[in-house]
Length: 455
Image 1 (cartoon, rainbow, N blue to C red):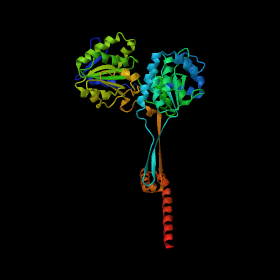
Image 2 (image 1 turned 180 degrees about the vertical axis):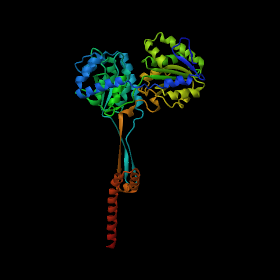
Image 3 (image 1 turned 45 degrees about the vertical axis):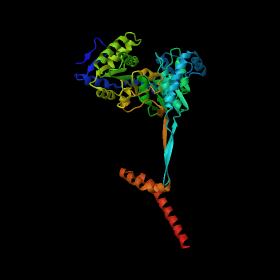
Image 4 (image 1 turned 30 degrees about the horizontal axis):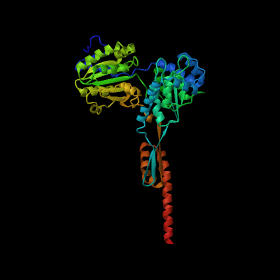
């Protein structure tokens, strides 16, 4: 059976014990089934906003946010005044965050390209920014200026012409000052006081006030995520955001108190957050468990963190580092911390992770706020096939092709053969008609040359 630190919130599982693999597999299965009642509610909200626009936006804002607002859009004066009220040191920190995220995303921007082939083949790809994108920023009881920066800055870097943001208003009908300050330094063009599924619907379909966008990005609760799924196809969306998660891989050089703090830094987000330690040292496991219990006692959001750790937390003692990395890659965490002596070498063995934090002085918190890489990351195991939010999410590629007669003559027969292979004769016919003209023109040229020779 699994061992447990004395009265500790985190259970400790030792390799070789009967429930070791079972307990880990249980934590890996974190994609919960959808709540049909949420989908039903969201569908009505989205349909209402699509059909009645601003009137239903105002109705749902009163119903869910308890706010009656005269104007949905934040005015320029409101925005200026909010930024003026932000403390100078806070303003500088937000500016530094935006600057570092901007510099990171500027490093490699995809560019258009073209190529020419002998015989008249000309093709390539044009890369351009989306025309208008929408950013959803959660609100309510908490404030998320970092979410504004992480979602808007990449769009700003590739010069999206219009970046629209929606966020729930407070009961007095205002948006938090620091959120508006973040929107300014991140390059947002327009801000609307709308939250929830109604905010997603407004951006997807447009209202009398809110312009329709081409893509919606940003985290949110179950209703927001359900709305994003529902409008997908009308607009593009980023990957579905689930609860935050961290997996720490630690060796004997790790500091237990630091690891405990890293686990709690993600567990304090929400009751469904996940925090896991995989270590090769039983003593580290015990000390981290004790440190978590100690730090919980003084954590402001201890109730939330405790619930998260009990539901989606655990400590696993692997037999060696090879097994530890197998477990880490199988979990495919949003955040992976390599609290080991040889983090750079171990990085080569990471296959599935949103962002990897290397060494003992790289807590997840630096990535959450201003390290540079985006903190909008794949969750729920989707790091196996999804990537962090980046500039590519705000670009679209258009390919182009031009064949001159010599090139079509060179490759046309193969196109016809492949179309016949698939049973699409019309495809081949469209090529054959052109080849007939090319052959006629060739015969006419040859006849003209023979006539000249006879003269």
